[in-house]
Image (cartoon, rainbow, N blue to C red; front, side, top):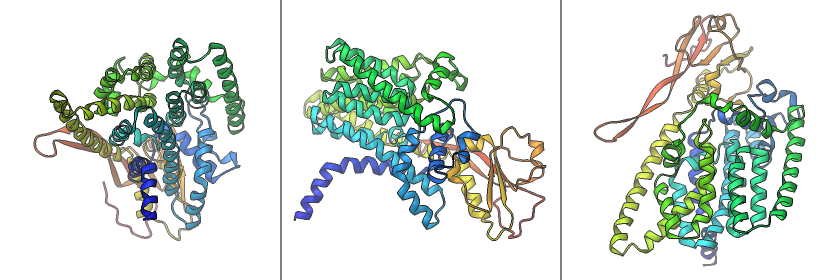
Length: 497
């Protein structure tokens, strides 16, 4: 009996964390690879874990990117992941297992900050609202899928969750401090959330202007000093990464080089896809509980202000999702409590139907995302079939820009005799004159090379009659070629193209 009691207490305390963590872990294991948006932090974690103090071997010195990024997030994740990575290396497992471990560690960090926010939801709104909050979060694909991806937005999300929790708790100055740290170190655009929250706290006289000014200036100076100290060492020059990002995106307005969307895109596409059933319920939540608008209006202002920028991506506003889920949970709790009343009974049935639809949408979105990393699967397949055991020389693999952007990182590379090149701007005609054994690229044919196999990637969703009504259309995205001048001594069987 005591054992059962301890288990019951454990599940009562951590059951929701196990649910959210399990869903996030499934996403990591099923789709372990990363894309170009995550490349800096992924390569940084690899280099910290494997090269350590040998800075000259770090990837960012050869491929610095458009603007510098901070190493602080990569350091934090790597410190917690290093014991597991050491065991993985000692056992001789491929490095991609270390990528999975690092991503799981990041997910634990982000979900632990979400746990703090969730506990404050329970204290302020009750257990039932907390339950609906967990239900919404677990049914939404994007939040749990993104929470393990080492994006600057996700690193900032951890601090934003802590800010939200302190905001609900009434600790307004610590809440502002967490937002300042997120702004200065990880994502300068968090100031679009910091501004409305700070303004509301001032207008409602929740904080003193002069005390807040002293508190915020002190926190900002500490954060600036920390990032300049750490990142100047890593970049080998004096640098404040997020200031350079701010200058590039906001002052020079260069972010639009990566595409633009209409001003309403966040409200008509991004939020509906990420929130699903919680989207309409989040609007209802502001009407059924007078406490909710105090928390929703600044977050809504954040999304509106972000809509002014022409380049838009869902990950830019991912930090608004927890607060919208809170509002939706309040509305769902009210609907559930009144479900026996005539009109509310119908509303409750509609809500349950939308829960089922949300689960279906999450499953379809996950399947689409599973096929969104063709380069990672292609390189892994090459390693498995190629497996050049007892080869005297190196097996050189050239990875083109498309391949490097769609699933391949240094975690995907195997030890000798495999060797890799990401050299850019090589014309196709020159490839046959180089010493590359294999090519991983987006071209179905290359002179002097034989196409061994290809990997399909997600192309689009297609509606059709019958079951299932929605199908994933895939298309060959990445091709693997072998130099025809070099013999295959083991006469391996390749699928062909």
